[in-house]
Length: 267
Image 1 (cartoon, rainbow, N blue to C red):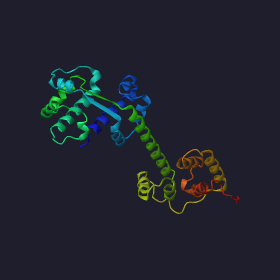
Image 2: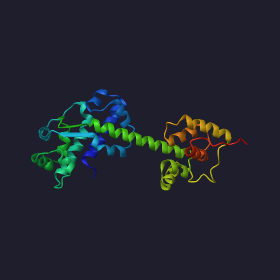
Image 3: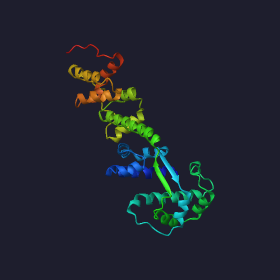
């Protein structure tokens, strides 16, 4: 079973993604998130969202929680629609945990008093659904701004790196090339080629660039000296049209070793 903080992380950032699509600045500000951050969060995969637990601040008002459980009145406020499912999930998860003697450390950090833990442990799923619909704001779920900034930068850089690797595969870079410039393993290389319905081997050894193509490629290589090697390789590929990147590797390897284009005489 996932942790309560993982569940709340999904709830918060799924809501953020919805708000990004509607550019709802007011609600994003309430959650401690900028529109740029929201747009970036909307591009993340679920497995990455799950790694953002440190980016949320979850606080529970114990008195209001008991009040919600005691209340028989449901709110008709449409603004609460996004919060109802989150509140119900939070209560159900707290109820399951409270009924278990082995309470996780991360839940102990919520500092739930003994009377609240007991009340949660004896409440039913219907009790939790009703309490969630009262509109009583017994919890707050916001972004931890410092952690979010750092974590989001890391995840976006990770996605950028993965995108570059994907483009290298599609550009038909050889395993020896990818292994040399990125350190990837043969199994990963084979899996990615299969994912794109590309043969593991293109057949035969790579060819070399013509003299004219090498002149063009070297100019692009030097013009992009500020980029990481993998991205410089992609720029070379773009400059050569349909030529497979594996066929540029002999030239690029020499440029990496000598930092210049070895002298060649045109045939």
